[in-house]
Image (cartoon, rainbow, N blue to C red; front, side, top):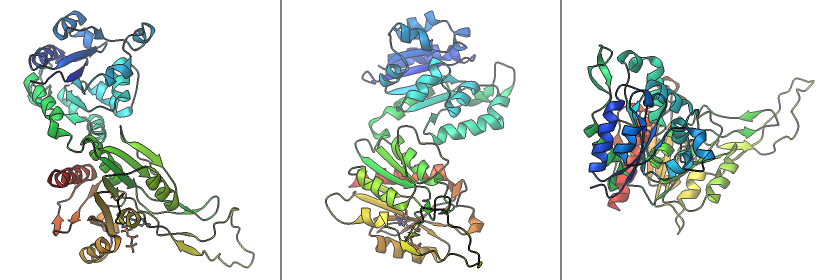
Length: 402
Ligand code: CTP
């Protein structure tokens, strides 16, 4: 039995909405408490009365009516749930979620939540296979949204292929999996992730930078969060969006990054994925440096930046139990990474070859070699999201065993 776990079920507008009625019934039989948001399109397929009767609760539909009546608004609806489930999740709802739109009660509640979210997509096979839906799906996965289905089969529109919503019993078992005690194995732990490049100013308009995009670090922060860790991300300049539920501090320089890390409290896990600039200007000019009449280029005097990974790895009562660094190398990956593990004093090194031909720096995939005290694990090439999930799982096994 689910001992009163609370599900907020969002019923989107698709023919599969009729199966959501059965889903409500099955969830209640399993002991879940179910509260429902029925979108305007969803109400074309099933009636609010059916949903209310089966859930044994009022049905929520409108964003603004609610607020004026001072009933449960979008924040309370999400706060009051253990898990949000969108079933059926239409192509339109997925697109709105991926964009972060808040144009109705369902979308606003999904945007306002820091609870786990499961979607059960259902749509015509062409819509499912459209590049826009593929894009939205990968954005949602990257944001930590869990996805069940769709299944392949004959569809209401007469076509055949993937697009049928997963069956209610499959959705119930996915929900149970997500809410099982072991599903959030890092709950109660605090994790710090550094990410992105740093920018070291030369003068008010120029800076020293590197090619890091921040994708890998952001994905790791999202993966740790989805396993339940309270996660803080300290990021250098990056175009990536802050992962949902992750407290994100944006900084510019290595010195600011170190200060933000040390000011963020005590952690159980630290993952230093940032490509921190090794040097900054010894003397930064407060005015734009002008070209000289004699054509001589300015000599930039550099000084070494603080080493954040090394600082966090120092032994002591406040040291995180697990400190993980990255080794971005272009030559002798194995030897350099092992040397880095010892020099920095961290516990694990995630080593990757960042030679230009690998396309890793700024790209979407990564090939990892994980160095621990026990040896080296060579992981196959995967997307940065997959690397993040594997690493988070690996971290969870470490804490399960220690
Ligand atoms: N790192 C850090 N602070 C720095 C430099 C690096 O925290 N000032 C961390 C990175 O986040 C990464 C690890 O140290 O986890 C290794 O970074 P890398 O750039 O590969 O190595 P460096 O220490 O800069 O050494 P080198 O450039 O000589 O390879």
